[in-house]
Length: 317
Image (tube, rainbow, N blue to C red; front, side):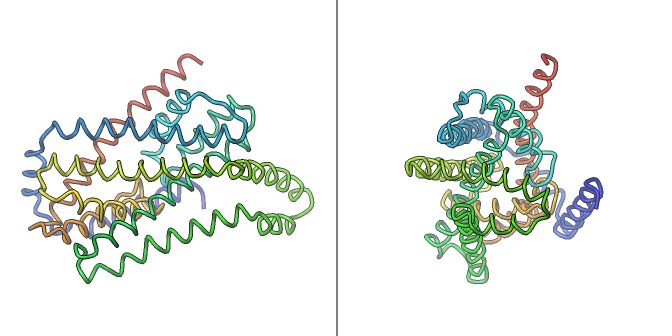
């Protein structure tokens, strides 16, 4: 299947999910929620976006330096910001990662090492997301309705899955064995690239402090995502306690990271409906689209600044 065909299918699937979720929404109530939004909490949202982008860039820089590549954090920050623009419009954040790899590979001269750093950067982020997605709901189990408690198994399974991926890459033997099954000419190329990729991964583990710092930054990043969503909810005057956001937002983040829809739409909305139902909102199916739409709009504003930075770079080239 061609890439454009996959995107058309994802777009159709996204539209189907949204139609099923919102077929009985009180649109007058939806409009009233948006009209009553307060602007000042949104300043907190944009501030957190900037802080989190810097945290992500610092984490990426730690991995690169562990592999002998010293790229200034400011350059990584700019690359991350531009990548956020591509992430917004392309499924599963692949476009943004491709840009980051291409951009920093030009500066480092080592594309395979750069791929390894982006892979490890992503992996630590997902491990932290799934860990918080299990730990917070477990700590606040009483706030989770009994009919929703089975969903706690989802982040736990995801967390264990990402740990298994990390162990597979660290152990290396299984990946090298798979490469040996490839045809001769292709095998030689794959084994060469794989050897350099795995060597970079090994470099990250030589200093345990690097991995500890990366995981710590990832956990702080994910917690600040919760605070950012809380700011959006505060703008909409939803009146939901902060700890409820801690319990449910990591679960919503896991749902929206599923690469089956455009920019997580549909899955994100379903997560907010579950969240608002558990929080006891009177009409969760009406509040959820307001939350999802405002969050998307704010993200678009921030990502568009990355797009402007990209255009500036293109003009200078």
